[in-house]
Figure 1: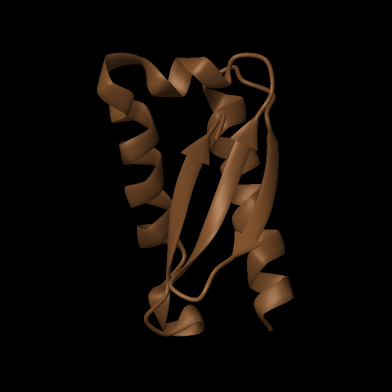
Figure 2: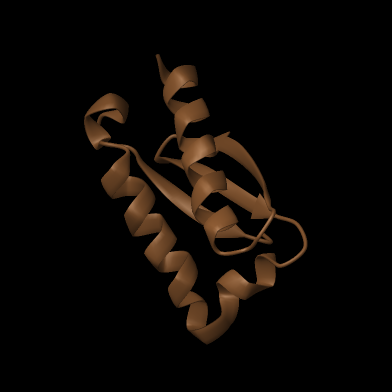
Length: 82
């Protein structure tokens, strides 16, 4: 089930950043505490402007749209350019 959820989350992030005019790569890295979504590509630095407010907002949207029930207590951490 988690691979299905991961695929949906990746697709969701692609749709959101696509609506922002960005074409970014999304990779998933699982850690004991969370699931990290790493965004990279041309324009990813746009997410880091203004003290990374856009990146923080994207993280809230992802965690709201993708219910934590399916991942138990672990949440998604969205990161751009490492």
